[in-house]
Image (cartoon, rainbow, N blue to C red):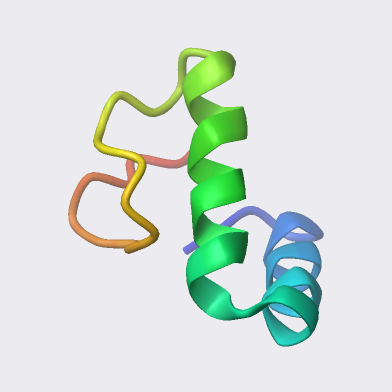
Length: 51
């Protein structure tokens, strides 16, 4: 589950650019912030450890 607000932004981005692209960008941003350490693969899965 994504935090409120980010869930809607990711959904909107996914509708306009395609889900894999939206997820890759989200993973890239979270990796840059040090929150995500998995592969940048375009898949949301077990690795997500949100707040």
